[in-house]
Image (cartoon, rainbow, N blue to C red; front, side, top):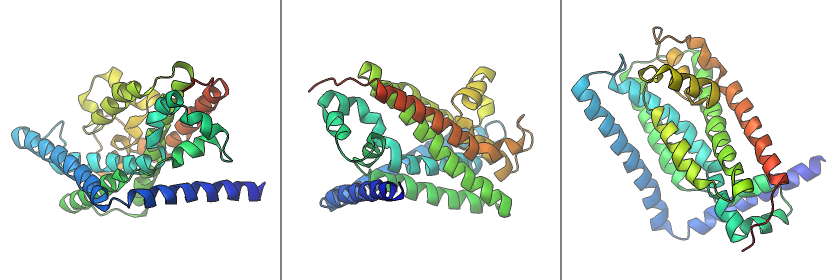
Length: 270
C-alpha cells in the first residue's frame, strides 16, 4: 500500500516537472505571463485606492486594510491555481476525449487532472500577493504574535481548500452535463470579487451565503477580524480560527461529489 502511494506521488510530481519544463521552452511568454498577472492585480489595487481616495473608507475599512483583504484572498488563490485551476476546463477534457485517456493511466483521475498543466501564472498571483501583504503589514504597523501567525497560515491553507473545493465542485457538473466552465464565470469569479470588500457592506442574505453555504468569508474576511483587530464588525474574531477546518470539510464534500460524478461518467466521445 505504501509503495503504491509513493509511486502515485512520484508520477504526479514527474508530470508537474514535465509541464514546467515544457513551458520554460518559451521563456519570454513565461515571464510575460507572470508580469501580466502582476500588472492586472496592481490595476485592481489602484482602482481600490482611487475609490478610497474619494470616500476615505468603506464601513470603517481604510485602503491598506482593504489591500490586506485583497492580498490574503489572492495568496490562497495563487496556491489554488497551482493545484486545482485546471478543473475549470474539465468539460473540455470530456468533450475532446482527453478524459477517456486519463482514465486508463496508472494514476487516479483526480490527481491526473491536477497535474495536467502547471499554471505558471500562479507565480504572478503569488508575487503580487506577497508584495501587497508586506506593504499592508508595514503600513498598518501590525505586530502579530504567534497565535496570529497561526491564524494567518490557517487562512491561507483553508482558503486554498475552499477555493479549490469550489473549482472541484463546479467541474463535477461536467460529469452529468458535459458543461461546467460557464458556471466558473457565473459563480466563482463574482463570488471571489465580493471578498475584496468587507462582508458587512452586503445584505444579510449575502453574508449568510458567504459564511454558511459558499464559505468564502473564511478565506480572508473572518480571519482578518483578529489579524487586523477589528472588534466591531458584528462577527466574533474567533470565527477566523476555523478557516482551515471549514476549508478541509468543504473540500472533502466537494471531492466526494466529484467522485460520485466520476462513477456516473459516460464518455462523450470525440
